[in-house]
Image 1: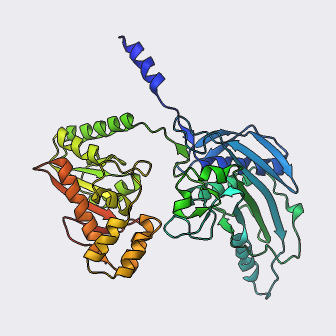
Image 2: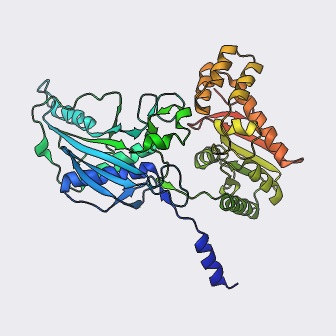
Image 3: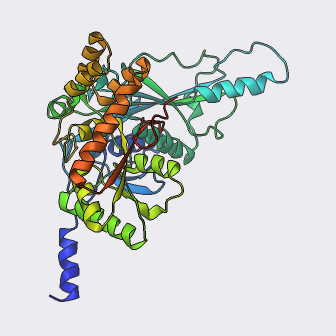
Length: 431
């Protein structure tokens, strides 16, 4: 086969990326806001992704709704379709502009500046989860109970992109309510997202972009997800960490791991650090700053494969950098840890709590936890350090089993903010 034929074959096999529900919701909100400000019916908008570059997103339709507008995006999961693929993600947007909305309380020279800062702090996005968007009812998720299930990264994307949309036009201060007392307090179902910067606003003006995200078939979609078990009620979650959906292929990811390990070996690395993702790798790199960058390889959920391939390539010293949820599954011996394949089982963890001398009531609470994050929160609140240390040791022992004789294994277990909770080589760093 010629080189050209090989290249064509690879191109045919290349999987197409899609975009996240967070990107879809942001694009819909941008299109609706642009329509309100300019009357333009956009067929595409460019969404700034967390990495800083822009992604063009098609807009299906835009409609007037009362004093606001609604735009709809058709979710595109690329070649990794999930339950939201081809579903409608909508955003209803309207504006509140206030002038002179705060009463003057004194006439000192600093009063105007203080009043201006107060207005700036009131300006931003008021975000609601509408029909088809779930709301959080349990602890242990990135969003606290009572709030719409719109994750932190999509929230940040929404605030940043709508702010940039406002910068493109002359703001409609004519809608202001001079002399009014300013925007009303938020209800519990709303979240306030401040703009990244408010330098464009006059000192005595306040502007709020009200956004309600809607997913027409969201409740139906959610029944085919883990949301009901996780305590997200009434619809789907609006997700995304990069804004993109990367097509998932086991073989492709295994080849990526193989390539990373080959590079590490070629660079003369004596140890390899296997992380479950970008964040856990970042924390490990900060802790093991003496190691060259080539030593760090992301293996995602491919626990056994990553270990066995490391040994095959010639590594005899393996370090795992993991968060608590993955460590729990590793400790149970699961060779592959993705939630789609392996549901989280906290019963073994609750038994371990008893084995470590904690009360039955605490053990029951751990067994009933919604997520591993929730379980870890309770463990940290109880300062049950010996439980976390034992999870790390069991994960290490399972890794040794997959590696075979003659391989040193170390487990670094971090919390979700980067605090090192357990190190099987150096004892407990937990303060």
